Image 1: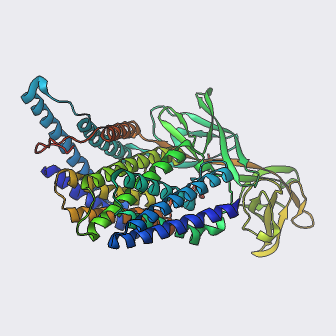
Image 2 (image 1 turned 120 degrees about the horizontal axis):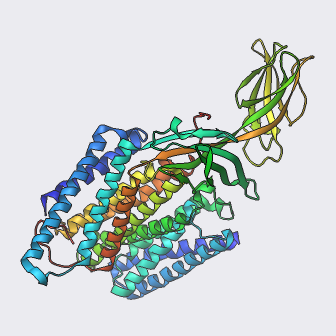
Image 3 (image 1 turned 30 degrees about the vertical axis):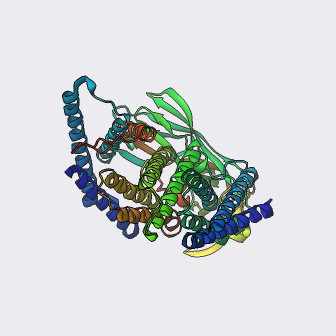
Length: 273
Length: 324
């Protein structure tokens, strides 16, 4: 099963990467055939991404939500599905290049960093055994997917002289992302209160999620009060997504805390009674 | 744009930038700094002003339009989000000033008097009846359970089990599973040659009457692996041993790993035994008078989010009114 899983991951990677190249090339030469092929590749990539997740679910007999690479697979799967819905509803393909590039890079990080864990099935540690795990992680992944899509749209707006993108649409997607991120933080806080007895401990992951939340809050306030130039809005959205990536990668690898799951049963100062 | 909102956004940005620096420079102490807490307090003040002004704006609107006033669920949602945020900040402030939190260890069979660790109106006793670890088939821990009894004036009020993700609450105090450990039970002769029992914590030194040698309990290894020395992995008691050392005049004579009830010769005339282990649990004990307010704030926030997600924005944006 681990081999099939590996094949699915590679298929996803190749389809996303090739799709990204075709989208990026197509946006300059505007060849319709190339763009159609790109859309087909994205659908293929999405299906193999989804199949990889289903296979992993069967392998571990629960939703695959507990390791970094499982999270990335869910994140890319939702991102690409949102992009496909967006393309289908609006007919705009301008953001495809950047969104698919993001998805391909994320899958590449899975291949580079987690290939050795593909076959591993380890039981959940006690702190993760909570119904809050599912909702906390799924809302986070969906929020991140919204932000990835807005980053793609914002990049398109910055690069292109005559963007085909409606700013109101971008605002709505960012708003949905903000709502989901808020929910994810609140659900995480409820869970932390139950597991560790403290709903907010200024853990690096919490701090950087808060910083991400702040930048989108600023964007939404400025946009709704019509204080935002299109270019500034795009830069804010790109910076927001950079923060999303830092909250995920940077904090996991550079600023370990609760979310590295190391400090849960740490030695306590003994005071017997 | 209303000036409150401008100030609020500047405060948010300041909080964001400073907490980013804090997480890199001093992740454990930065957020307790007066300066940082002042920023949070200013935000609370700013948002309170913001909400008050929005509410008075709505009331004015209502008076002007009278019965024709249109009802915008999305505006209510945005108001709730801001009110919720204020609730969360207020609750957190209460916790900073009046909340108490500490960590305690209770040995199996022993009792904790909450009055010793937390000031509360109605202190009570908490007794550890048993501590259990449940294991996965691969030997990794699946769950830790502390079976507790709550007693008041000697009579049993409640029995319950605390595990990770399942705290116990009695009155205004909550208990969380945090850690655990074992003390070792030893049997050795006293100065009259009579055998006595003692509980020995890991790292403790035992001076046995009648010999100059001292015995030190180094570690309880539930699943002893001779190749790992003092870096034993904790786990299921598949091969329990007590790792100990014997020394005389600061000279190390022996390091050993004894089974339960295995005779340990300290010297030619003195012997002792390890007869078992007794678990202790480590709990976090907490009382947070701000928690109901924080929870209500969080709930309002979520309801506000739901309303803004379900209802489209309206295009009426009177000056000085919260955006919606």
